[in-house]
Image (cartoon, rainbow, N blue to C red):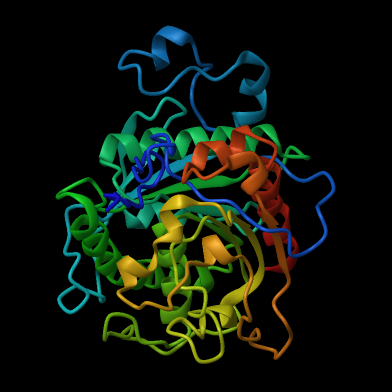
Amino acid sequence: MISMLVVFQGANQSLRAEPNVPETDAELTINTFLPAPPEFLTATSVACPAPTASRCSNDGAISAVPSSLTAELKSDRLWLISTRSISSNACRINLRDPNFRISRLDHCGRQTPSDLNEYLATMDTTRPRIIYIHGNRRDASAAIAQGIWVYREIARNRPTDQPFDWVIWSWPSEAESILLSDVRKKAERTDAQGLYLAWLLTHHHANAQPTGLIGFSFGGRIVSGGLHALAGGVVGRRTLDQPPIRGAEFDVGMLAPAVDSTWLSSCGHHRYASQNMNRMVLLYNHRDFALKYFRMVSQDPHSQALGYTGPRPIAPRHDGTQLPIRSRDCANTVGNHHSEKQYYQNACYAGREMASLIESSLITN
């Protein structure tokens, strides 16, 4: 019998299976569902002094920004929203005033304490705010490092100089146990995270804040759960303590989403998510070895991950129209890995695809 290790980690996930499968930084790929895209957008920058290698490399976690990119990043703002210190039990979480820990970040990942009031006061209808949600097995420092790395990759591919805000959503995903038990525990936590995200998005909607959402692996499950809860759906046996919001038209990017491929359908668990989507960019991988055994996480022998199968029927948007989906199977470039970085570093063009959400959110919101 072949022993098997299946762990859905955000950006650093090891997978052991057959002897010929190498350890990898686990991430997902995609099958082309729509035509391959033309040139896309890039990101903006951080209000932070010009970077130097010594300033950014003290802990070795985050490298310096190249000087050629510095000018483009000056007007961008970086935020950190952490839910690591509050409950992850969906039945017990506070949905009236969740005590998020909010900080401003510079491009090196250094934090300046902030709060919800500042976060809301700085909303601007002329600049998008993109919320990035990492995957499993990321501690607090790794979540920041990965979030800034992804931000820079998107920034390099921005087609215009449109400034935007980059929000790293840091949730309790650090490794706590081994193998399958850890993955199932984190899958349960995505319910609480989806509800927290929905609560925050009510404020985005109230302020007419152009918004994009990017989720990798379990981060994609948090995104779909959050949009479903925002529209009045039940997540983890809970709903928001306020009227449903539909028609918010957020732009969504998913990389190797560890969410059941049927959940966004008209009868699925997250069936209302599309009520608050404008468009979706989906990058998946039909060779992803971690997602291949997704059924072991869901405990449903017929369950398959959206990040493995690629696009499946999705419920219509709030106006009854079909959700525009731009998808790509990245198996040829990512291989059997579940590695977020390989989606950006190889010819899957994740940087430009996710950068497309920046200007798109301005056009539609």
